[in-house]
Every structure is written in structure tokens, then in C-alpha cells.
Image 1 (cartoon, helix red, strand yellow):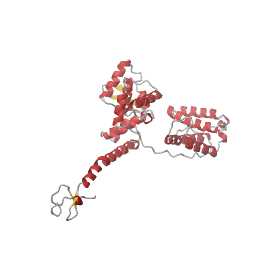
Image 2 (cartoon, one colour):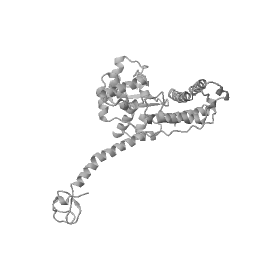
Image 3 (cartoon, rainbow, N blue to C red):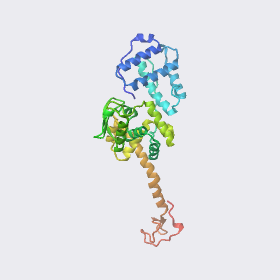
Image 4 (tube, helix red, strand yellow):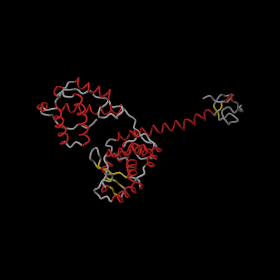
Length: 339
């Protein structure tokens, strides 16, 4: 759940303003508290969606029936401004929108109970090693290769990658200073020698200075680049998002033996329970591999054993004498173990 922002209560007379004027007052107040741009944008999107739904009806006349009608319509049909979202993602969006709307009503002093929407549980998507290889094969220009390397080799969030300045990079110490997109805190990550070689080559090629951004793209530009790379690589474009590469880094890191606390620091998680999600993924991988390989071999081994025709115990298929009763084995198909 998003952290609650202390914005107090609005003056009673604010409800005499138009809906859009009230929204602007609320947004300006959020900005004055130091809320991040992403937080402000999320609140604005949620409240604007509700205001679009109620049309010309003043906020002071809104009832619980209006809120329920909005909630049910969005659960049924999704969001007009987010037509590309699948059902699970629009449910997740509505989960947060109801939280933001509830805080907005509290600020206005409206006694409206906004029913919550359960956030759907979704399995984290990660790329296979084969898919990662295909992406790199599809990356023909230096910028595409650099973007893939930064996302898959560091686990950085997309906005963290886009905020890296050349001065944040310690080429000798092989570290990158990261200002976390969510909380404004600093942390340091490292990367492979190959990634640092690509960074150095890119900086020289473009004659970048210390204050220049390493990757001069918007989030939308980065997103489109990854989609195009996916299409070239023969991977369904809907499977590729910047955060999928972060998930892929995290699961690969655990498979390679990086400890959970170390991964937590690399990813910038404040709570290690967030990092533990990736541990569950690797456990799933282990179980899958066990079933595919170990159980297959064990079951095949059982099928190739024999039953001793004297004592009835399972014995190796190539045994000449039973190791339990010592009798000679009659090695016929009738004695094959059925276990």
C-alpha cells in the first residue's frame, strides 16, 4: 500500500469550487509536500478517472452509489485511457486507484467508504537464458547493447538507468552511483567488465561529460526500444518490459549464488521480504528441474528393477542372485517390478 502522505484537511469552502479546480488544489498540495512526480501523477490519474466517470456532478453531491458504480464499471470493462491493459493489470490499477481516491475524499472531508479492490496475485515474468541470448543477437547498435547490459547486468529500475550521469560512474572502482527512483536514496551497484567496456566506449563515442546522462532517452523511448528488440528477436513484445529484465537479473543472480541480503542491496529494496519473491521463483525452478530430471531417472530406475521370485523384494535388473534371500534370480519378464 502506498505510504500515507500527511496533507491535512481541506477547508470546507473548497467544495464550492468546480471539480477540476478542486483537483488542481489537491495536486498542488501534494507537490508542496515533496511527493515524487510518480506519486503525484498516480493520484492525478486516479482522481481524473473518477471525475470523468461522474461527469458534471459536483463532488459535494457524490454518494457511495456513485463510487460503487465507478468501481464496478472499471472492474467489468477496464479504463478508457488504458485500453491496452489486460484484466489482471487493470484490477491491479483499480486496487491503487481506490486507495488514492479514499485519501482524496478524506482530505475533502467526505464521509464516503471507498470499497477496496483486492490486488490480483500475479506471477513474475522472467526471461529464459535462450530469450536473453536472442535479445542480444537482435541488438545491432551500441545503444541497444548498452541498454540491455545495464538492465540485465545490474537489475536497475528503468528510471534509475535513465537518471545515470557519467559522473556517477567510477570506472576504476567498477561501481555506479544510483539515486533510487522511488525514495531518492543513494546506493551503489556494480556490473561486469563487459558492461563497463560498453559504457566507456559509449561515453567516448558521444563525447559525454560528467553532467551528461548516460542514456538520453525518455521512459517511453526506452520502452519502445525494448519492444522493437523483442519483435526482432522473435519474442512476443508483450512479454518484454523494463521491469521484466530487472526480474530476470534478480532470479539469475540467486541461481548464481548471490546471497539474499546482497541482492536486496543491489536491487534497492527497503524490505527483504520484497526480495524473497525471487527466492520463491528459484525454488520453483528447482522443483521443475527435479521433476524433469531426477524423478524421471528414479522412476526409470524403478521400472528396470526385478521382483525376486522367492522373497518378492525389488532387486537390480542385472542381479543374478537376490541380495536378500540369496536365491538365484529367474530373469524373466514376469518378474519385472510394477512399482
